[in-house]
Image (cartoon, rainbow, N blue to C red; front, side, top):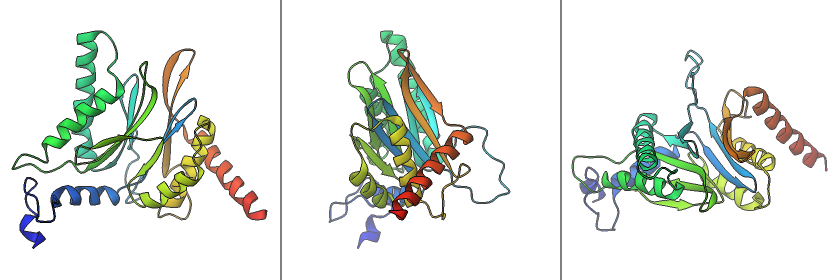
Length: 249
């Protein structure tokens, strides 16, 4: 019976489900993993770079991490083309707010605007949901560091640490067991690397397959930084060393 309701985003099935939204979420569950962790002194985002063939030219910019404004960044899992539409919308909303009120847009308000746009694509005929999920990380003077997750339905929620993409349940289980609110950015980087190693299909994570971004305050100024390959390699090596030490014990 569910097939009768597959082609419509605006019609509920007798079980109260919107199948097209569920299929969009399933597409995200097959995408490269993305991790977000709230630390005491910043936020860490991490993502798996999926490369289907070695013949592809390496991307000249980040494949997973995007800057929305000076105080907000995001990591995506799902269809990049869909993500680009929503990222451009978020940047436009943020700049309009800045122009109107002469102050940065509160992080949650920006997330809410993007989610309202996404929700509209589940309620009007002739449209399909965006096949992408986001982790938004930002800082504002109202709530300091914040981490939000948003899915194709238009729902969003605040998190201390979470994981989206393939094998996300395994990643969330690891975060639930090992996350500590007092962790520093350095600790959060190691935990994010452990999550990626657990969720990735590859036998081991390398600097070519993963990337990290940190959002911190330095000298009163907010800094967004994608780790270069040398630092990424050092983080992965430190995690591997810790794992071998635990094995020896």
